[in-house]
Image 1: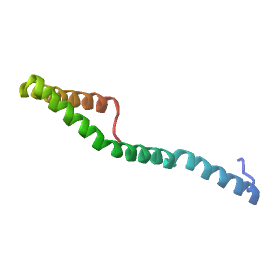
Image 2: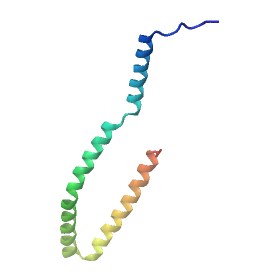
Image 3: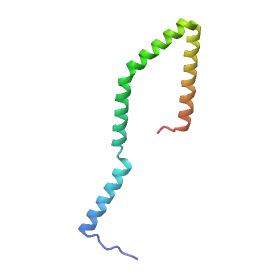
Image 4: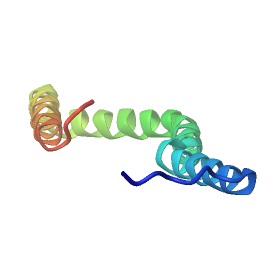
Length: 95
């Protein structure tokens, strides 16, 4: 029977630090969360500009081609959003 020798205080401290370091590397996602928060803040600043551009483009489209064409484009957009989210959710498995 092979008995292990007891760890010294220094070995215990080094082992504990290694375990803590490994745990933090695996479970610390603070950097990613900060990047996502910055990105969402920047996108929120762009939303009014995008809405204005979309309304102007829709108005021009209705002026030249009528309401029927705008309806087709909205329907096509809904179909594409549905298809894209379905395909993406198929490849990305949620936890």
